[in-house]
Amino acid sequence: MPGDRESVSLRPATAADSVAVAEIWFRGWQDGHLGHVPDELRDARTEESFWVRAPEQVGDTTVAVVGGVVAGFVMVVGDEVEQVYVDAAHRGAGVAGVLLAEAERQVAVNGFGEAWLAVVAGNVRARRFYERCGWVDRGGFEHLAAGGIVVPVRRYVKRVGSGT
Image: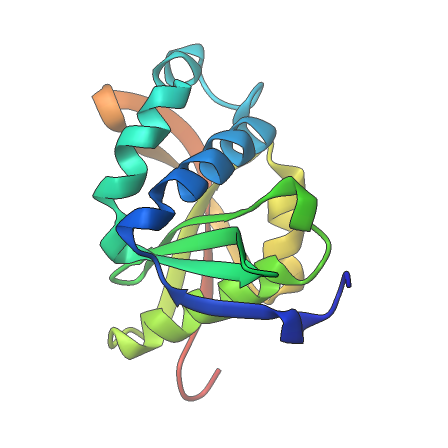
């Protein structure tokens, strides 16, 4: 049932989750980035590239499971929330909020008082979501993507842990 957060369970990703993560990541990346990133990055982010990257980052990945199916995932490294994606079939059902709260918890457990993430300026849906969740836009910077591709992004931050 959409909006029923109790139906979302979280667990560390396993190698067996890599295919589901890659599929969600590829489709979600296209939804949020096409038309908002340099053509060089669009060309580099082939479907195959996500199938390579997902297993490489399984140790940093937490998956959200709904009805026995991977519905989304988050990747956290240190104080950075690197990726947050939800399968289109599960958007609007609270999965993203559960994943983002878990990412914030992990950053705090990692010993940091502030979490950060980067989002392309044109990804308005994601930016609104982060702002609704209490994240603050701290301005633009140039992210260096794989292959040395410069991508203009916005840096969002949020205090985490005790005192938030």
